[in-house]
Image 1: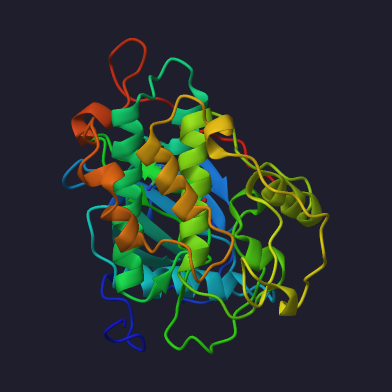
Image 2: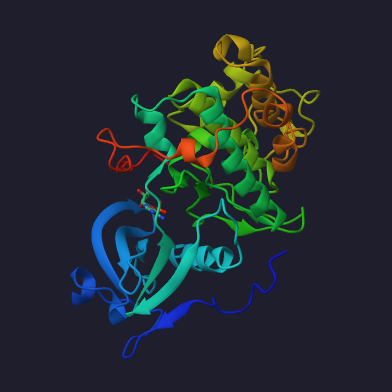
Length: 352
Ligand code: AMP
């Protein structure tokens, strides 16, 4: 469990003449960051909850990413909640494979989150055909991802929005699980949660059927969809609607029955689908090793109760005994074509 979920974030910096919680558009937007501790550079991207800029710690020159959050005083419920969630959860999570929240800035009535800077993400890597994704590198990316996820789960945090674009890569090639805007703490298996989480292509079937009681297994389905995407270099199950998503899932994995997934027909939005046997993973991933397919099968198991946990996935022979071993971070670090630096991050947004 998180140690002290009620306390204020530790690295919060307030600035004179400003009030946390009420954001007015400020002339400071285009100037230096508050107190001149940080310099703000170019826009890196825009997420659901605000713009992200590249920045620099003036004193040390350390590169950072500054997420300037949308108005927290707006009446839109969810913005504040997401903001607070991200701050409260991330301040407690300290792990090599989880993005570091360096500081929380409250200035000019607005909130900015300062993160360690990452050079790219797995979505950009998958899309760049000049990047070689061999078995060792895929294993290296999955190892970092699952270590980060396993740590979050050990801390009773569900990420709930795992996808290649939220798996950032540091200049050293270390995978960082990022964007905790939809994350939440869980404890009791009886706790009721919203089903509107996880970008559709990575959404577990129990969520698509409207489950309100779910757990860590939703993140493991997403991890399976991410492994499939690393192998195929295109999204594995790109549904255009929730129904089409379910249909794609069952075409690939077979239509569930009460025998293969006990309780499925009692889920709130359950509707029966045409029975299908599913396609052998060997047919869909012809070049993958047996252990890769076995891990994929365990992660993309329809019944959440039978799906692999993150710790079980890390102990799978795919990581432990099968050759090649996972590529070390130094081999996962992206290189620009001129050899000078990193690949560009993607800018486009996928449909939720
Ligand atoms: P988010 O709001 O977290 O989805 O971030 C929006 C975009 O900002 C991402 O797609 C990235 O392109 C970029 N971004 C977010 N966090 C970082 C970071 N720590 N380092 C570099 N770029 C980032």
